[in-house]
Length: 97
Image (tube, rainbow, N blue to C red; front, side, top):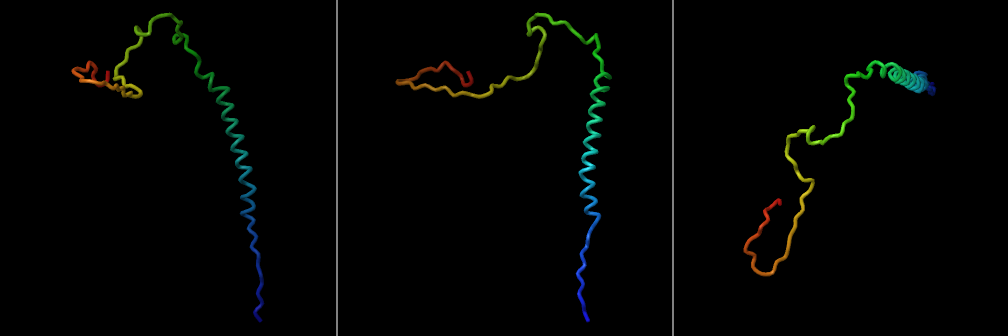
């Protein structure tokens, strides 16, 4: 006789991985917090302020202290027009003025 038997496959590995993932994420979060705290405590003290780099504030003109090279470009162009009746003999404006 051919008797058919139903077999259920219970995969304990999948359940084990489902429980392991939240624990692993929690452990990684704790480690990240510890590293950030250690950097905050000891990392900021490793670079003390050098007194030679401190300057006093003085009043002065900016043009004496700043030099720059380059081309100035307008942010946007505006077309200006006019209506004229009659004959136009000379226009005293160039393009871009």
